[in-house]
Amino acid sequence: MYEKRENMDFVESIKRYIPYNEQEEKDKEVILNCLGVFEDVLTRNNKIAHFTSSAFAVNNSRDKVLVIHHNIYDSWSWTGGHADGEKDLLTVAVKELKEETGVNNVHLVIPGIFSLDILPVLGHMKRGEYVSPHLHLSVAFLMEADENDALIVKEDENSGVRWIPLEKLIEYSNEPHMHKVYTKFISKIKKL
Image (cartoon, rainbow, N blue to C red; front, side, top):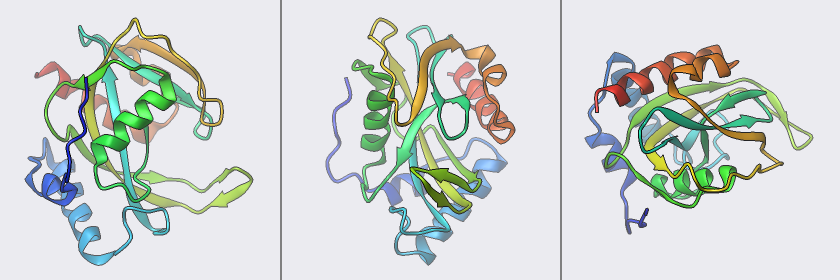
């Protein structure tokens, strides 16, 4: 079970994170630069770039991933959300995973950050209002969830929740820019 870590310094955890590949190395550099340039990267008040936190949730045997059918992107994807001022990004990832899927029994597979990515967000409508294109400074955690937990749909954000085979994740995603991210995740999981 996840336990909240008090006084988590998210900047230090990003600085300590060892990039998996060149993409993460470059994205880490830009993320740290954003932290030095912008004062409000933990909130959506920053219309250029802000932090999000996600949980890539796998089952116990690590051959399935828990995904939601995202309303805005009309695609099956991982869970996650905006930091909205919260500095403990693991807390954000766990909260979003539970809210968006209904699972309760979750824990970290590996301690700390699993992936750093800068994700482009295209302009879109949300709750009747236009949201301009911007960047998500994405911090992801690898979580294990219990396949036996009852799944629920969070209708204001998704229209489906399901476990799918890890190897079929790309087939379920209509977001081409996410295919590289998911392929990287699968590769990292295989090396655990």
